[in-house]
Image (tube, rainbow, N blue to C red; front, side, top):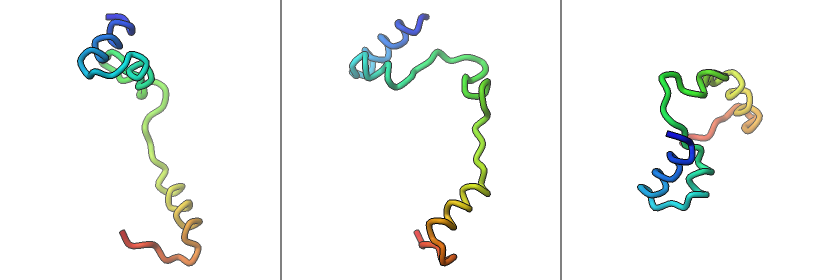
Length: 64
């Protein structure tokens, strides 16, 4: 199946326009996902915490 075939099938099944489907980035399934080949999905929690401290410099965090 080509990329164009996939985009047309998704468009037909979902009722979305072909341009909308193309913008969503659908790709054929593979044994190894594309994102695993280039860079693993990793969260640097130290960086996230540092950003939170910058948002709330008094050290007090908002309760959710």
